[in-house]
Image (cartoon, rainbow, N blue to C red):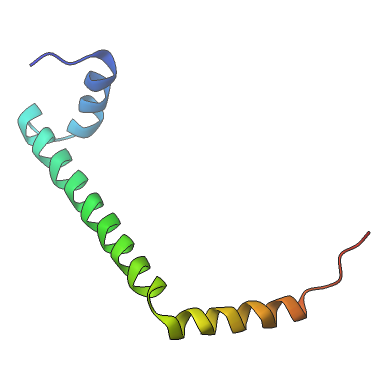
Length: 75
């Protein structure tokens, strides 16, 4: 496998103290998969909250209360 310069540099960072390039690639793939799963989980949570009418209503009340507490703008 041939890597460009930036990929070679990235591999050397990922490799760190790992004993082989193959192990470094496996580690990087596992870490990338974990990040994608986490992002997917967060996106699902956002969608669930956005669909929750009671939560949206509570957020609206809080925004209105915060707006009432905000100082008047300095002109």
